[in-house]
Image 1 (tube, one colour):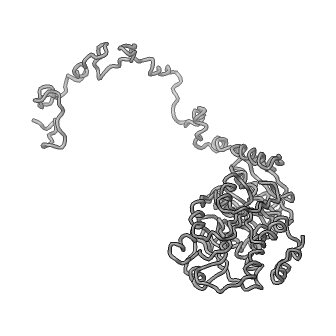
Image 2 (cartoon, rainbow, N blue to C red; image 1 turned 120 degrees about the vertical axis):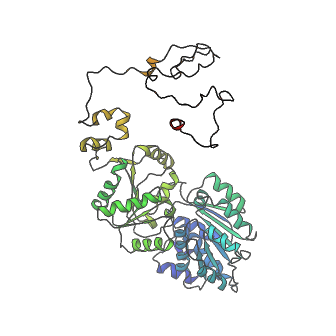
Image 3 (cartoon, rainbow, N blue to C red; image 1 turned 180 degrees about the vertical axis):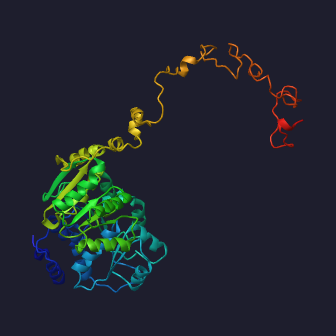
Length: 497
């Protein structure tokens, strides 16, 4: 279907044409006509099919049809996004498709100063794109009033739930008027999303254009069997040999992303990382460098798996194979966007085999598995044996530490081996079969409640041993009660005389 067949106003059609689009994607062709009628919509489509334009274009058309005076701090449309990158991407889409309408907008998110955002809200905006955390913060400071919201959009709803935003979303919805149009879009449709949709939407129209949790047909998916220690070398090899002109590498942790950047720099490959520990300005600079081909590799965590909208991404690398199968679909959806083709490469070590099976179960097909083109590096214990270093923990567990003993230390081979401590124990006795051990030179009588014998001086110390003039413990007043500590003047036994 052509955009000209969707009964949109001419400024929007001209803006869409200037962006290079003429044919609407399936999700756009089905969702835009329903949104124009003012009905609630529950949309589900795989990543990279144009969901942002599916709600941004009709919202701009509706706001343009009924223009009202701007009110300070009172937006007419609210769009919630889970991440900063996605919020910026949505804001850019509203800017691109509504550049001929004069509809004001602003985007607010954490990680940056709030003063510019507060100033924009004070002047008045019609479209507000926000992340839940910063929005609630400004609401508590009375910088935002949602009582005039006419259209509410919850984008990437499944990601919102994964990040724990369900309670903030409910707080925000409680301040929005009941008479509104609600749009919910998601890449997957689990049971939790269905339950949330039942609470938010009123007789919604379900728009589902692709099988849930399916990947694009234009993506070539490959899995490399590789040991964890060989992943840096394999990644550098693939970046240079394939080659990977514009690649996103996804890691499991923030420190893992920084570690990959350091490894690539050793192979003279330029790369930058974006994750939650980076400031917003640093993340924006990294995205700009990646979009302008200043760096060929961008390393990111899953926080950016749905917020990167860069054209021409040739490869997506799953450096760490995620344990969430749905996240795999979102990651590789960064390539093959808008009908283009792309490649998805995944590294799978022994510990990630279960994750691979879960992904194949979700997408209902097996992925192409190949072996690493690089020879495996020696194991750490083999390197220790070759270099003559200290044994590894695995060597010690197998008894391999006997091979690494120092050669200059004498090894008594002619002496008999020491008897096991268990062989030297006295015979078992007592009511409960417990062994009776000697107590400081004195033997306990065999019996359960036999009293202890008084301490006897060991043999061999009577001759030449100077006896203390202090009275013995048994002759002191009070019986066997030990002396109190911390009280009285200390007198050394040898100086008592």
